[in-house]
Image (tube, rainbow, N blue to C red; front, top):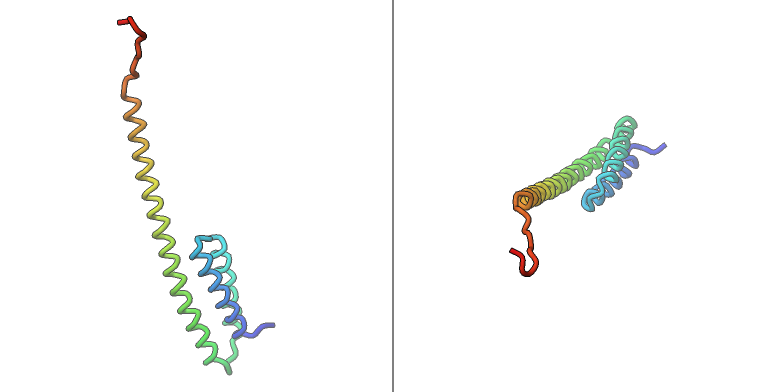
Length: 116
């Protein structure tokens, strides 16, 4: 069985992968990494060794810093998605306006030569 420090190292690696997934917009991969990372941290906490508390604290602080970066990236992605949705709504309203405008206009009839 892995000790708590190696489990936290694996959690840090997963966190970095999660950060990369968020940066590329791959939310499914980020969610999967997040779940695995949470499990690793829980296992590490349950297996903590009182003799290695200083090392454990350092790794947990690194994880806390990584969590802050993950949160920033997730907020950036959220803002980007919200902006895209707003643009999509505006475009949809614009196109709906064109459709309504063209439905209200009478069709032009063309007459052949010599017809009145």
